[in-house]
Length: 118
Length: 118
Length: 118
Image (tube, rainbow over all chains, first blue to last red):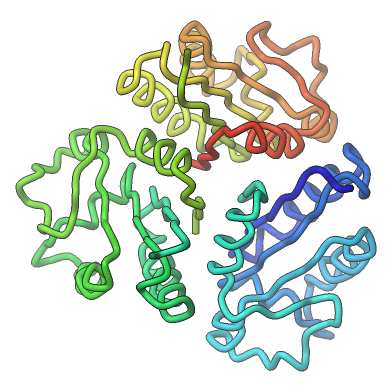
């Protein structure tokens, strides 16, 4: 049983490397079988889920992919995707879309998840 | 009964449009009868509660007013008002003053409110 | 018995004065016997724990020291110390080191601590 549960909240693109480093440090510290991790992206931060051949942030997507293999769930807010004109079909398959990121943040906390905003 | 409860924390003026968009998206998603929302402003963010005829942020106050009609409670930290030399009597009537914003954030979390910092 | 418990999270150097002002306002409001306060620093924020004779932030260390006398616990993340090449032996004695700041943030929330990110 994974005893600890946590949501990481990100709404600014420039925070992705910090969030991913935090998550990887967490799993290194606790072990992936002892913590359930979900990353909820809303606002501009959802834009970094989309691979762009001209995007300097592709190293971020590579890091997201390797992090997702540690059973970390990546979430995108649909309101933010629409607001930033991103077609959901462009998202990598390790990203799950929810209607509203803020609702996800509230529901998870009501289920006992800790909240961290790097 | 409104099942979900959440406090949004804001301490930077430039975050107001994000906070208000988040709250409106939340209520659109869950319905205003299913979630209790409080916005706690401290630090410089309390300055935006004051209407200023020369203030480019008056659109923020308009948005606050329409958001307050969705039964969202707006809070100002008295320490921050004093620190920024704002007379409480200048605050719009939809804003409630508490002695310390941080205390409000702790008390509400102890009552089961989720915390979101946009 | 101290009824309220809170962790303040800081990962950016420029937030120290806000965090310390928040903590001092909180204790002024509730009284130090009614609230347990822990400040968890990770990322670049751990660098400000180290006294530097050329450091313009020494006023921050003075304020940390006086705040620690109010029974506030200061925490540094070891991953962040290593990442910023800071030898733990240089830390002031009021700072406690944990293996991972994020783990500390999760454990404390699971024990009922409120979370505040100034």
